[in-house]
Length: 426
Ligand code: PMP
Image (cartoon, rainbow, N blue to C red; front, side):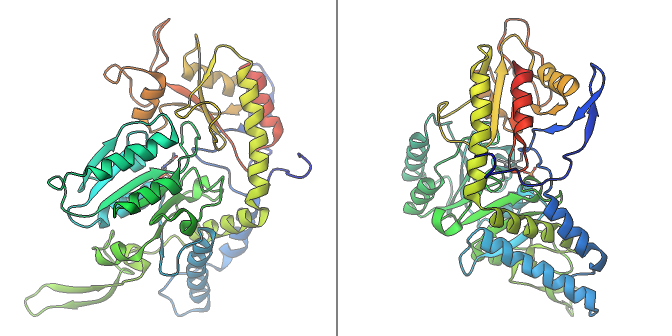
């Protein structure tokens, strides 16, 4: 297996870090769910293009035209990567958070949003102008579908007069568990609702097909998809995007601006994705995302998934040998997941544990509540009123952990990193 599926080359493989015990060791980046290292291929592509970049959509010069072409072609690459429908738009944003805030800004008046309480805060919080119905944490994928079905079937028309939108994650950033996206989309559509997929954790690990999953929009971040920070994507149905006021107002979003005789200003906004991309766009970020999409496609998700399964098995079996370790899961320990695993260790403060992994073994994981406070509280069975904030709350001796440790990995992870992690936990 290993010879067939070697890790994809990523940046930072040779970075060494000091250990408190003396000496140094190569850094084991096991926090992919927060930000994955960039692929070497992405870096090479960006480095090759960097000397030539110029202003996008503005300049008449050769390099401006080249940059405009690369920026616009990047949309096509992303659309292909996501298997978008013909009429879908691909809007470049800053991140998944930005993408979902953009969608929240274009929902029609009177929209009701349905969101599970288990979502990342980026999915849970942006719907400020909509009526939000929070759905209870399900304990099986089937129950997730039933919960949504019930909520949509018993919609109270007095709560919201407009359309309904469901927002759901593809893979949890806490448990790594896969959500039944296709079934949730079918349920949403059966009730005339629309659905947006938060694919921040899914897209780096599994192919995402807008057509096959039949979702209306997809959001993801470049920095979790082996590209650098600063760019993300919202792709999907054009109508709500086209009918709404621009997310950002300014140059690039406007087609024509005229001064009225009464002193005011009239604006005609673009109807394309540019409508929501005012200002000079992040052409390098978009180009890097497109490069990552191509690299993942060329490597083949079958190969990537097979390799990741092997890593998940190594971690799962290793943790199972430590009686003090409790792996967190909503749908049961055997439910399919991506390479994201959270756990607590009896008798240990999670923050101290994560700090020890770093200081003694050169392993970078994350501890805390992972921007999914309600979910982590549910998984830990902790009292919401006494729960600490994001950071490192201390559990008193003998009490339940108030936060967890998360190990996450992906395409560039060598076996040695997860083996070192298992050894360190033991
Ligand atoms: N959704 C999920 C499931 C995530 O894991 C994250 C990042 N942890 C986000 C949304 C937000 O992504 P970003 O910070 O890139 O906006």
